[in-house]
Image (cartoon, rainbow, N blue to C red):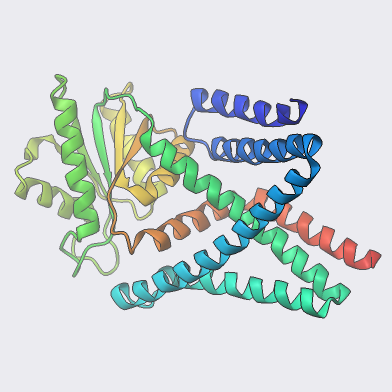
Length: 334
């Protein structure tokens, strides 16, 4: 059972982290490490009891991983083509296509290195696989814990329901994606109101260069047309990013009620990153998500993950550099 101790320690730290503040990326990493170490511990335990069975399990896992990578590459490329057809060729819409092509290139590099079997090519391929493995591990941590966070029970007492803005169609019209957020916010407001409270609906979003009015104003107008009371709406109309959405909204809420609590509404793909930003900006509230079209979700999740990599760029840069230096050292030894 000693083989499972590292996994148990990581899981214990994960539980402590969730209790302290569930809006942390470290919780996602600890959960991922706990799972990976548990699998390694299981393989070591099986190998110590039945060596052949342990080797067979390793082969099965490697085979499943290979099939999974090929399947994932095909899915990402297909989704990327769909995104381009439906949403256009903006850089954000090309993310899933680019990720799929990158996986194909990685597989081609790995196969080529195994066929040619040259030292330099093998080291390059091994280094590329290590970097890809690191990114894949973080991405899986992000996906799994993000889904878990979205299902954790949150405190329902709230003084504000904050709706994060997005772009407008034609500079004036609320698009379906933003309408989904507003509809989810109305449902959450109704749920809170049934418990005896009348929280303020705070729409958050400034005016972009191609917009004729601030997003928060268009959002408020949409809510009023849906029958929501105008006197319960407040507008935050200066923000242009999620960080500013939450920072400026926090200022408004603190000015009105220093002991406020809030629920933040966005789309499901954006929930976990918005929660991390809320923690960093000191907003007292958790995040819930509205549904997103299935074809849009993969690229949106990749975009959110890339944004998190940038947010933790120093840590990621150090680890990337360590992998590259390790590969260079192994090449030098050969």
